[in-house]
Length: 274
Length: 187
Image (cartoon, rainbow over all chains, first blue to last red; front, side):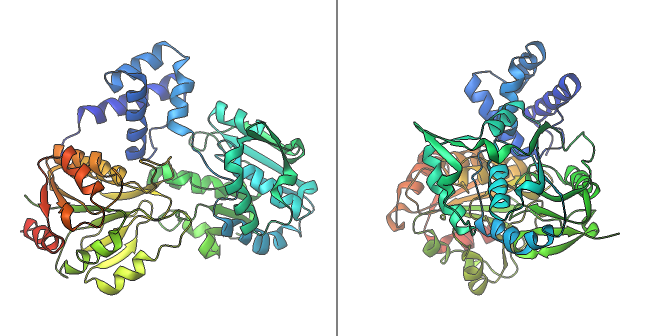
């Protein structure tokens, strides 16, 4: 089939956003990007993707809104509790052997995964020796992650997930309810560095012991997935751990041979030591 | 038409309905089939095992970036949308729910319509919501064929009814007619 006008417009828009603002969505999985752009189109009332392109090039206040359409996702704390249980039971015993730890939450969005890990590390007595690095490309999402405030109506699910993940305390010990919001304890993020980092264009982060990056790779095309898997491998210490989403896999990656399965069912991998 | 892919959407009563469609696809059916069934997000996916035992074709859960293979039935995993990329590979996303559903039928149908155009058949079965109606419209607008379960024989008629209204050109069928109709489109 020949390329549709809409597909041409999308490519041009992504090129424009990259060339003017250096946000690179050109290798994001296209079907998903297209759906999001069509949503933006419907919501903003423009006639075509080309009109979005013109607007974003001439008015920089449009960019944050566009980023929200292209990146922000709603996650949940302790999503897939069995993943966090596997970290607790299988990975933590290895982490305990290090005097200090670095953990990278890559593509942290609004922080649900960060707080889940911070709570897990606190419960396992590792918080004091750990530095967390929470990165995302979207400044608004990073700000939300830094605030650690979630709608109270989501807390029930978070609490169930936390219990199912082997949580030792009640989740309520980690937040205070404030009207319809749950505000998570400042102490959970005391040892967290929040940082603007692009998996697409930025370089490796040094010597991590654990990288958790869940449901981010699915948004990338194969070529970009390869780059990012390599970036993770370069950022991990020997024998460091990588956790990805339950439906993601390194199997199709060109750099799969840098990792071995550690907990296969939970998609936790270990960087091989060479 | 020369059929290149099939997408199927089902909700309430869908497992029963699919049991009267998928096992009838013969071993020589050389086209990929992608299926979205609405299932609760925190459930294990029992559909693959269930249908693997009943079907002549290979049955598996769809994986991200997996190239489509002919004669294979792919089920969307619970709590993920299933999409088709240009170049005939599958993709997953954890984007927000559509029609209160993840996976959503509309997401699969719309992206498949984009990827396969007139080579696509979309099938909407029983269900209690409107998911699939916009998707089937996209399939038909791209030149593909729409098939909708006969509402009188559907466990819940809401979904097939909505699909027919959105896509008046779709053909109404009994369950046992669907596999033979798809087979005929491959010739």
